Length: 406
Figure 1 (tube, helix red, strand yellow):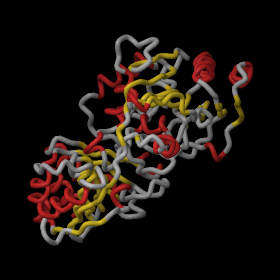
Figure 2 (tube, one colour; figure 1 turned 90 degrees about the horizontal axis):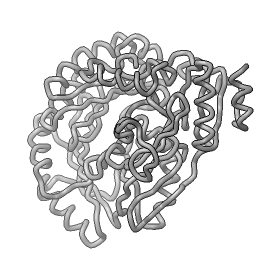
Figure 3 (tube, helix red, strand yellow; figure 1 turned 45 degrees about the horizontal axis):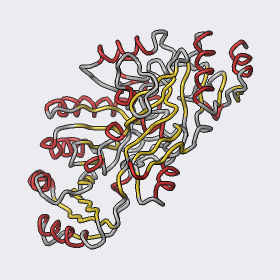
């Protein structure tokens, strides 16, 4: 138990893994709970010295995303690192530890009338999980994704080296933009321990304009709304199979200005548009994220949204997502097996490619992810593999989870 003894010699909280720590059904041998960047560095040095395969966990809400996990020797739990380190309201920036839940950060920012302009489609998301998965919701149309808002990051490499990038730079890694590389890397390049984000003022008021259209009416309506001068904060669709499509446009701004902009939205959409204060469905994926459901992420050009929506609903999938950015999510029917998922991918991937996008299996039971190609063809795989070789040459960080078996 050299690793256990080494971690304890650095006063790191470490214990044996239990079934509650299992990732894809596999129980890690040890679970370490470091309390600082320095302790994460000591943890990774110790793991690297004995060649221990390591995975990182926040609240664990997205540990099933990506390809199935291999056997893990060590699970690094960062939930003990949840401190808001710095908030400069005048500069609209905040720095916090990676284990801090996004909801807690938003709550602390609320008092200053500011927010981190990303949504939380999976409840319990930590800042580290947000960065690792690049999860986003409706407001990506207005504020961008976490990749756009992350301006500084502190990471620990697989060998224990601490590196910084962006705001508060102390040391950079060979000129790489770590913020961009860490976002969506699924914990395969380094362990994020601290992050600095750009903030936005929280709006005083908001409202939705919604309308139901048949499939033939979707494309011309979206084309008109994408060209509008209404500057919506979100443009969402909800398309259950065999039904009409609901289109929803979110307006945010001042208390005095929102009613007039909503009236303008109704005029643009049509007299049958409804105006409501809030909706619940745009903030949630169309599939459960408890590991029992299969959900896809579909990307395409704006001009391909209607086509991809029709293609997926024809297969019996429920489609929902950001029509204003070409990022959709699709739920397969409950209980769909690997054969059905593979058939859906065979139909949708060529269709998405024809419209400049791709389809990945975002969440699914392990039996499905074992049997299908989760990521599909990715032209940049050789570049990603070279990055992996530079950051983690021994392939100890979540090996096999990312594109191309990285």
